[in-house]
Image (cartoon, rainbow, N blue to C red; front, side, top):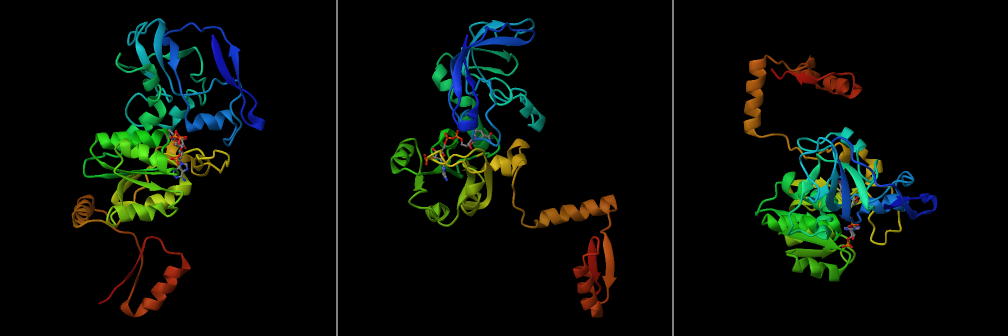
Length: 345
Ligand SMILES: NC(=O)c1ccc[n+]([C@@H]2O[C@H](COP(=O)([O-])OP(=O)(O)OC[C@H]3O[C@@H](n4cnc5c(N)ncnc54)[C@H](OP(=O)(O)O)[C@@H]3O)[C@@H](O)[C@H]2O)c1
């Protein structure tokens, strides 16, 4: 079978076609006949050697995929030859919560990807697609489509009263627009190009901002929403846009941090990636959430819980009302644990 492999990326783009034997599916495995694949920002990073490490040599790139089950190994009952299917790239994540350990099994990351005529894959994570969906359409879904789905629908809980802001017109962002419109939300989308923004309007974008001609685009988002901001923000770019994403937020907004690789429109400048600087933010599925003290209901719950559980606060020292200076000096000394109290009378 013909496959592409990543070469030595020390000097940039390195990819070549080679022949490999068609593999035989073992227990629980499927021989997957690829019908379509596609590009994501991460693939470029790997194939061009722009990531923190050189591209993985001899690895088959590309995580997007759609195709057919060609042959099943012993014990496979979920799918049968001829089934039309797609596959996630962190294939161990079948349901429930993400676990960072699952990143070790990553098609096109730690394992061969799908720029190949065939691939050997586990049967369990395969997802059947209907006859009405073309392989080309299906092959766009597994990274950009699913990521945007998670951000807008699953984690974002988008609803019709929400305003969703999404950055750029790349794969993830455009799916973000589509899922948000599907949920009935209002969508603001940014781009470096007015022509692209026209396309986004045709897709249903309610408001658009050109981030090149309006570098302070977060203010434009506030202006468009009567000063309120967006309820869900898809940061598909990276940490470099985080400040403006936060500025553009409405009260209680959810910021979905997605951008992990450099995605400058010219794709030449290779800034340090957000993933390099904050590796756990994405790979441990963390959430950034603001806290503004707490409500009366929370306070009532707290008092009930302390009473029921006989919890006492940790008080380091108690000063008299005329010992305020001493209290401050002790505070400043940094020696205290827990609280310093001043008795008033
Ligand atoms: N966390 C995850 O699970 C996950 C999953 C998939 C992808 N990702 C990451 O998400 C990012 C986007 O992926 P993608 O596949 O959608 O990339 P893509 O299709 O290559 O899209 C790149 C787009 O980003 C836009 N862009 C670049 N700089 C921008 C800026 N400063 N402000 C606003 N938009 C800007 C440009 O839009 P215009 O041309 O309209 O200006 C460009 O077309 C990548 O970092 C990728 O690695 C993460």
